[in-house]
Length: 78
Image 1 (cartoon, one colour):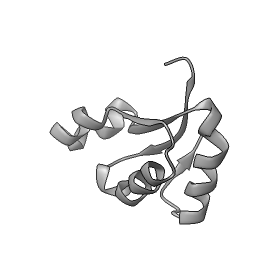
Image 2: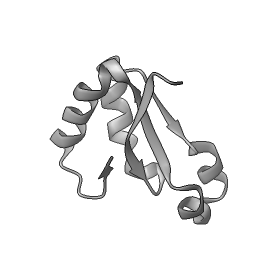
Image 3: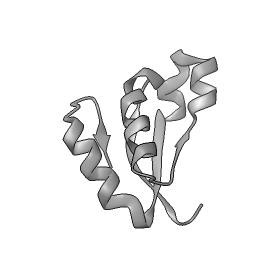
Image 4: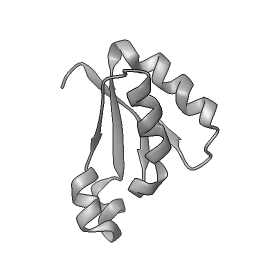
């Protein structure tokens, strides 16, 4: 996991559904941290620090470019 870096945070899973598909299509290695916990307890999202998108370091620039192309103002780029 040391090779993975956090590049975005989300409050709810519905905020990244399209992004997840785009990352998969681009064959980018990624993981959403806290996804399961927040699906079970959505009102605890802030307590968990949100759902964090982590990508492999080699895919970081490409993933950020995909996020920027979505032009979603709800994303918090880290």
